[in-house]
Image 1 (cartoon, rainbow, N blue to C red):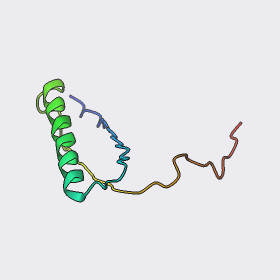
Image 2: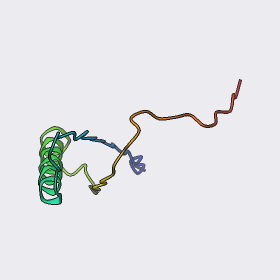
Image 3: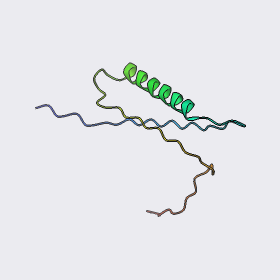
Image 4: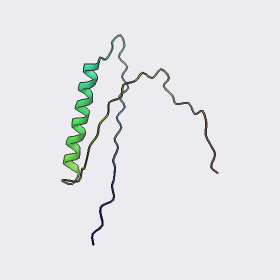
Length: 80
């Protein structure tokens, strides 16, 4: 009897660091860039993955301001 395939997930994260001196990047431009990036990823998936291998694709847009450019470790547990 054939076994069901094991689910596999591929996550792609694109982080656009937008720094435009003297200008703001508005929602319309952000959405246009987001849609273009998603469409490019979909096209690449169709080109390189086996036909009918993709069950579902989800995309999410997150817009945030990051005033501090570095992550700060506040707690770390030594497992050793």
